Length: 278
Length: 310
Image 1 (cartoon, rainbow over the protein chains, first blue to last red):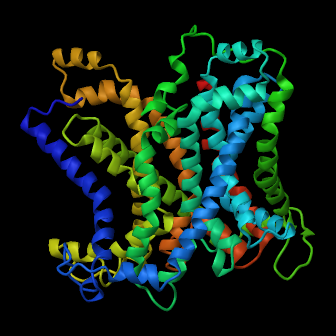
Image 2 (image 1 turned 45 degrees about the vertical axis):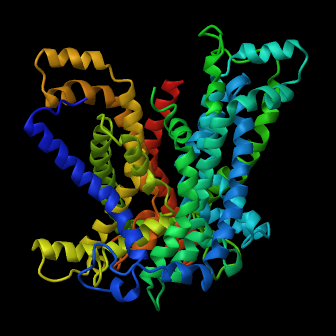
Image 3 (image 1 turned 120 degrees about the vertical axis):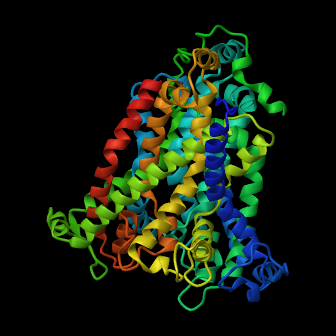
């Protein structure tokens, strides 16, 4: 795109790369490095750029003595369930919007999509008493249901844009053979839609996995607490700040989502930017 | 991977085939398919939203059994509440700085990542990492960097001779704002970059080559070809960025808790505190309603673009 043959171009380009690259990657590097330093080395006014004595003590402590494994398991359960729920709901709704022409389709779709703009914090004010009335406060099903808020609108839209591209002929042909619409959807459309389905699942999984606000508010008992508030309450509270432990636990908590993301990022980015970029 | 070959676009049909939808009078099934999502939507999004709108007209605090209708009194109270006004102002600064910062860094990084070089694919993948980290983790990372005693930022700036003493960044209003803004910019670069890279794919390379032959330099290519081409993406990214930044709660709360004092209390934190720390539900809802109003202009733009896109 840019012609970098001249010296000036090389310098400007190289400098921009260094500055933004440093800003982007240094914090990640520092996370890893700090997690590997024993406390004696970690708490120094002039930090060492590379641990002189790499130590796994923070990891061992985080995984054995703390409640981190429990938080991880809780997050895994709630995020998986809520991602499955969102994917299922968005799958049918997306197909419905894409392939049927009933009255009110367009306004309903736009309205659902605009819900992305309702502040999550405001919704929470009313979700809280709602969950309380349904006796779902401080329960996993309550949190899972509330997480639908984050990802349902965008997920529906992503699947809608994908299904719009599925040719009608494909479905009409199967109809002519006497298959019911639901059957066509399940046996013909879903099998060719695995990439967007995976994208939507991962998208909603990420929202739930990364959440702090809803989990912190709707879950009060320790044994159901998820990773976001769990980390915050364990490592940086009023009485102590265990930075080494915080860094190690952060790495552990990030690993599953990072691995999943690395495998699926291609679909993911296509899905998220689809519709906006033509 | 095999899955990608299942792309429906690969099916041999006329290009107009996918426009009309199914017209065989099957709309009842269509509505049935929409029903579960519509119910979930109504239960956890629409009902809470309307209910919050309604609650803004009530006095409802922790000591009360039932909400009491007070009309617009909550809004009258807001009008004279300096804290709420301050939160609006803080939010405006926060949104402006984060959106502008991410725009510059995200666009810059996308242009760099669009340049062919060895290892680009790996670097692109790694650039996405901040996006997927749990918000608490991002707050931890930046909290540690900005730490007053052992933070690497202080050490770095002292090494450079910019400062003489370690600064207690998170204890000063400007320092804390800087920290929450940088954290959010860092978090959002991957999303912005992805949008720009997607937009850059459809750039007409021959047109640029032709301009080069005519003697256009890098700057002219950027100004006359790349930026005009990216305009639609730029607009959507700014709108999405503003919406996202107006909503941001997690990293601010985890990093500064809205402090020191109230220096980083953005609207999301203000509403959370009023609702779940002071349990003044009616007042919190009223602030939330004004918050929604501030989201309306970008939301309107976004929807209009989607309608046009269809």
